Image 1 (cartoon, rainbow, N blue to C red):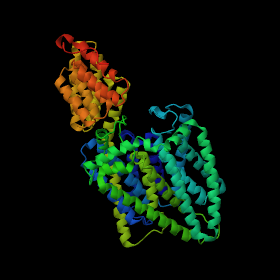
Image 2 (tube, rainbow, N blue to C red):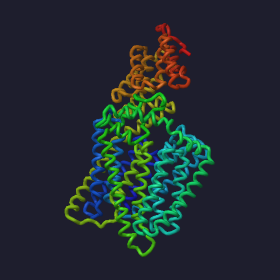
Image 3 (cartoon, helix red, strand yellow):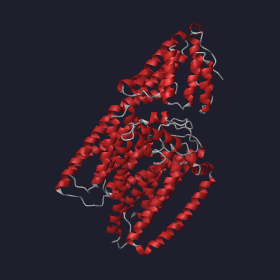
Image 4 (cartoon, rainbow, N blue to C red):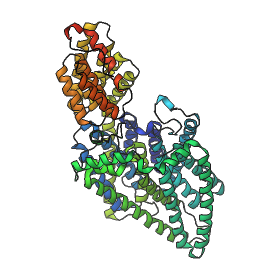
Length: 630
């Protein structure tokens, strides 16, 4: 049974990594369905005794998940909360399956080795990206703007660093503490080095710092273990380990400095006070002040990050670049306390289990003191500390693939799998009820993923068609998506874009206002579901200009600017709108503001659409101007 479950769980965790970490809902639904299927197996093993996981750990996990789900349900934009809701539900099931079912050490080791093999795939692809300095990705996925920074199967190098640092530290623990043969340890040791080499070529400064911190944590825990079973040999172990660590660090540092890309990333660590993350964190703290106790709701940083953005950040601040801060802003003090209690309990239980395993197995052995269960627990504690450190400055836990990995690691801590099956009547009853609950939750997750899959599928098709200029297909697929899931604002937006762009390209000039009107209708439907979407507002403003409803267009532009006052490109679009109306002085002021905020070629933004509007029937609108201010 353990191997059936470990196979399904392994496929789930591997699949989502191949699908860019599940960063779009469409690519995470298959994994959630597989996780739900794994949970359904609980029905067939409801009577089987098992070692008891920590009740406090399990309760803390359930409470945290329940709070996130309830807060997501009452979040202001239902669709934006959906990602968090599915992710935490999937994470809880991975955690519970690991804690209640995958207690066999051998099965856990095999799953870790599978994930280690996946890490090698990540690194091989990452080497190609790093060496060639391109945006190479498998399966037609796209990533932009990273050049020589490796991201492997994922889109962002920071997220690859998060995966590799966790798996690398666990592989190191297998190398040091497991009962593997010398040959097997040579392989895991080599794989450990490859993982951390992969972290290096990601160029992730957060990955560098958290990996170093994780290695220090692993070393200190190892010294603690040696001190328990061999106090006399502790000093010698410390001296030898420190000498080896210094040599390895010096060698690794020298090699890193030889590469200009890596050297540049290292140099930026010393310039951390100038990092744009600081401005993003300031915006997140402003968001937190909106609703300190319960937060502003799941997914709400997407628009609050824009509203409170500092002028230094012109890229879209989709996430806060800090898991703790984003959680604090979206879920409030209540969510943050539940998370910290959850993590603290698991670390405490993990350390207690390390001591227990050391006393029971290492102190009483007549051979070399080693234990696979100890290796997994030490690796899990070190990996959790590593990922916790990385979450201070990045958002790995908002990437479903990495969040599910984290859930599995925490499940290892909740139940080390070393105890004997508890046959007490009370525990048997609790076990049966819990497993029944896991099965029902799995069924619900399968049903929800299946129900939402079709809409996401057609939405993704519409988005890709729009990106590739296939406007007719984009319209057809957006309409299919709307039919399948009318609660998603994005298909309406893509439909509006397809109509708007079609209007600018329509050879029959008299037909253009009609197509612009169709676009306006679609944008209004999108905004009804997501009122804070500045993208829909500014595009609707352009479409309203095309439909010659200039007063309504003015309102749309001003609302977009109100929602994101420090985004230069919005000022540039507004400048083009003003120039259409001959308001040259106001247009120049908006253009100057756009340039001040760092918008390049601000005077050309929106000009294609403006020229299309002018070509429709300039005789009916003599006030329109043909040339934007320079």
